[in-house]
Structure formats: C-alpha cells, structure tokens
Amino acid sequence: MTQAIKDHAIELASSLAEAAGGFYQRGWAVGTSGNFSAVVCSEPLRLVITASGMDKGRLTTDQFVQVDDAGKVIAGAGRPSDETKLHLTIVRQRQAQSILHTHSIWSTVLSDLLINDGGVEITGYEMLKGLAGVRTHEHQEWLPILDNSQDMDELARKLEELLHRRPDAHGFLLRGHGLYTWGQSVSEARRHVEILEFLLEVVGRVRFATGTRA
Image (cartoon, rainbow, N blue to C red; front, side, top):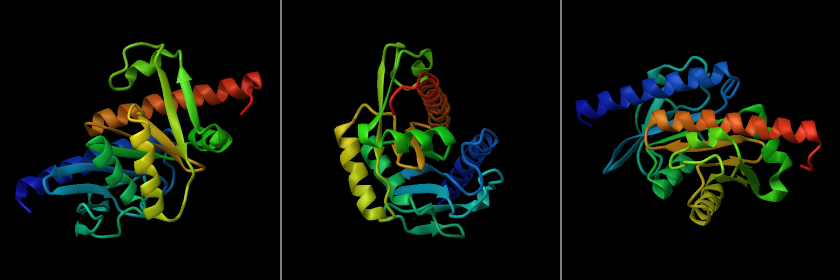
C-alpha cells in the first residue's frame, strides 16, 4: 500500500468521523449505532469503514479499518462493521464512493410501520432538490424498505435485487434499523442523509398529525 493511498484513507476516515459526529449530535447515530464508509481506490477495490462497536459521537481515524472487495481487513485494528457486505453491494451496484447508515427515530419507526407498503413515497417538498439529479419539488422519491436479517449474505443478495429493481432510488430503509444512502463523495452522501432524514421526519409527523393510515 503506497503512502498516497494511506494518506487518502486517513483523509476519508477523518471526513467520515466528522460526519458521524454531526449525525450523533442530531440523534441519528447514537451510541454505537450506524456505520460509515468510503472508497479509497477502485482498482483493486479498497473501502475504509467504521470498525464494529465504536461510539459514533467520538470517532477517531484509528477506529476505521480498510477492507478489500471480499470484506477482509487489510489495514487497521478491529473488526469491520457487520454490514460491510451491504456497503460493498452498494458500491458495486451504484458505483458509490461513500455509503452512510443512520439509526434515527423516524427512519426506524417508518421502516416498521410501512413495511407492508414496500417503501415510503415522498413528493411535493422543496428539500427533494437536495438529492443528486433532482430538479423539482414535484419529483417522486420512492425509498424502498428491506426486511432486516442477521444473515448478511442473504441480506446482501436481497439488496442487490432491490437496487437492480429501483435504479432511481437514492437510499433505502432496513426494517426497524434505519436509513442507508450514498453519494459520489462523503460530502454528497452526507447531504443525502440530511435531506432524507429531514423528509422522513416530515412524512412521519404529517402521518401522525393527520391520522394517515400507516
């Protein structure tokens, strides 16, 4: 591993730790919940990702590990997130450069309440224009919901199928588990978290305020 790649990995880990701290302050990744990654290089694929069990409000760059395209640790101390296979699936299916996973109250609640609908439809809000490629508040964003599983191989296969069916999705929810989204940089992925978490809270509050069927 060259020094340039090592330096780039540290830079990415620093950006991810900063994002995680902001999510923690907003209650979107409290305690050890959530996991965050970024692509260090594509050929061969190397991913920097949070080590398992770390407090997301106090992450440091040495609390990240590097994994290869099979999820095997090649640098750093600790075990990678249990959901590393999901991150790698998103990288392959979306050519994403950063994947962020949060555990907010609203994403968790809606992912459970709307599981039978298969997803959350969001339209009519100006904040939608913060998503990559969206130019109007009339855009209809469909945020699919995937039933959770402790079998990561099975879950990764189901995720691959979902992303193939919904090439327009900017993210998805795991039932009872929270939001996954991604971007072409850590900055874009962070923006997508902020936009989607805002919209999920709006949708949830409107539903509860109006008694809309969930």
